[in-house]
Image (cartoon, rainbow, N blue to C red; front, side, top):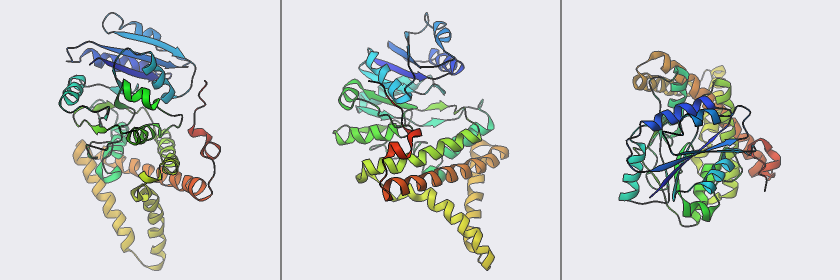
Length: 334
């Protein structure tokens, strides 16, 4: 089995440098290639890539901007491997990663896998807080942190693998973003392919975002979900409504105080106390525990109201997704 690592990048040469430095430390003994796809960047990473040409089997490709999904597809089309591993440029790869992937595929082969993410000690407190909000069982059910079902797992495109055969049959990622990864997973399932979580194949996901960017990101996540549910209603779940119910319930609980009814708000306070202590214990930092509360509030608010907005427009009013939310779709040139 020959791995091709596909990395799309947009205006992030510093991230590529850090990612490639981490791959130099890999304990994997077999040959593999790295394919860098520059997605129309104005700040190119070609000079950074050149530094590693003598130490890694690496190729660099520049294309017009068409989004991360199309860039991944481009990389898989020019790659030479029979199994593709996809990373985001803001990931740092543990040295055991490729060895762990080969071990899993040898023991129980699957045409598409995904891994979880973690935070390094060197990450900022805000990055660690956002990582907690995105991976904790208390917030997302742990779907990004490794507690989702091993089988029927929906890989996330910052850390996933797909066989060449499955890519060619499915034609890879669509033009929705975010949401291109669950869209691909569901299409693979409908074609008879299996997906699986590789628990030990995690990456350190740096998430180079501040609070405003995080809010925008989770809002887009919320908007994308009803679109996917309209495409694949058989995979819709009531749990997707939870952030919307949570945030509306919070406002309702605050309003009930006007009538002297306190217990609903006390339930929310208890939840936030549990979140604070969980984040504090995990990070061994009170500051990160407090910042995690901020991250969780932004996450629920952004996702919840993004979901509600999209649900009304897509599921109730039956609007065309690309007309209702053009910001979620890249225009891919033929």
